[in-house]
Length: 104
Image (cartoon, rainbow, N blue to C red; front, side, top):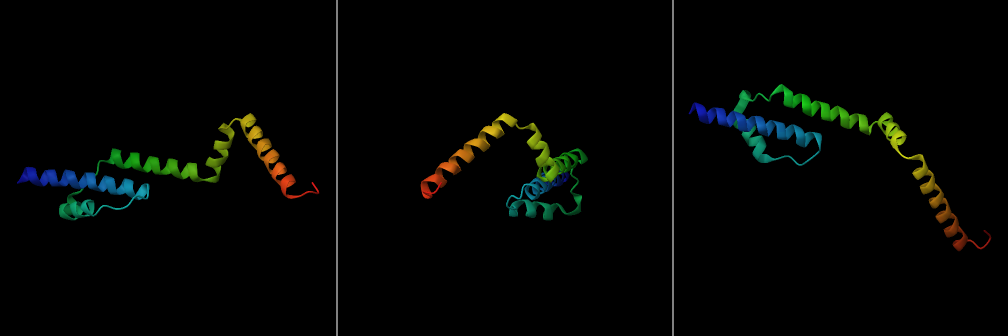
């Protein structure tokens, strides 16, 4: 019986971690995980290392989503590639405008 209860607690810990990851990545919740966590009660103890990993990932995601993260992404991009893409877009817009407007 002890072994079964320990196994149930381990399963509940895994379910808790899955729930944290689902919340982080906005995935649908699992009813099975919720039931496992209810059965285990207060005995759930997720290892701190795993919680730290989830928290670190969450802060990295927040940094990437922030304006500063976007600016840093721009710094890593190839400027020549950006210039080529911008000029190609301008040429395309100009040609479409010429097609539609005979004054241009």
